Image 1 (cartoon, rainbow over the protein chains, first blue to last red):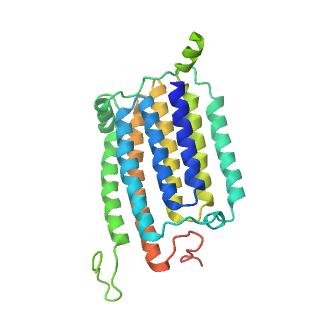
Image 2 (cartoon, rainbow over the protein chains, first blue to last red):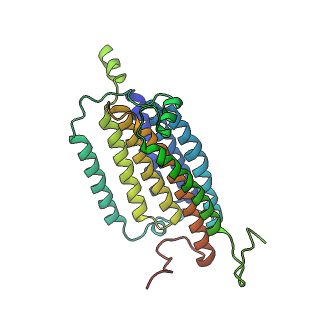
Image 3 (cartoon, chains in turn red, purple):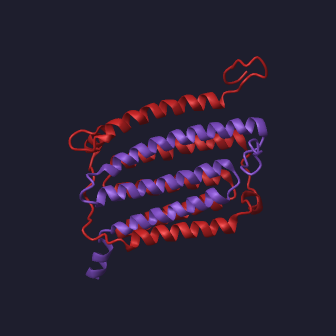
Length: 179
Length: 112
């Protein structure tokens, strides 16, 4: 367990640093998918294999491909110098991040976590589905949240289409995607 | 030797996962503060969301009275993050069409 934890932690943290400090945008996207894979491994260690499958499908698959499409549409993939990718707030931002990280790590470390042990979560897809639907002893707020998330995903799809479609110059009518 | 093997196979305490989540959150916040490219800023926001997800699932697995609700919240957070990145990249695309740049410090359309 310790070996797997150390491997996954170093993979997640080094890939996260690679996202921030990589000079090529495409390399940042690939580092991001490596970091997501590390978090998926953590989910397997934490007895949530269904959530690990969601993580691999949605983040490593869909979000990375979406970000790569965004890169492809908006910029040429070339390595830029370190001065041009960072704005002038590198050291203030660094100190803010160090402050946030040490504060959060300190707060979770001084808490007495004795009495907690692994193995309390939903072990498979069945209990996870019961939690998501709010039945069989799960919190009933999930019934509302499930419906809200469904509507939110529909709104997000429509908003993405409406925002990114190309408008004609005059007349105000939308012509669709490409001429 | 046996003691060393026992140390290697011991279970990780809850603090380990939480500290990894906190450090990932801090790295994502650093990137969102310092990078100029809007797409990279979105990637760093995704990193922060993943750190929060890791903490949620760790709590759901370790706390005895939570009932595993954190895993359900993590699924909802994944759905919200997927919607967010779709709308965000659509906005980046729309901004690039009109301004020919995606650097966040050169887009001053709403500056008074």
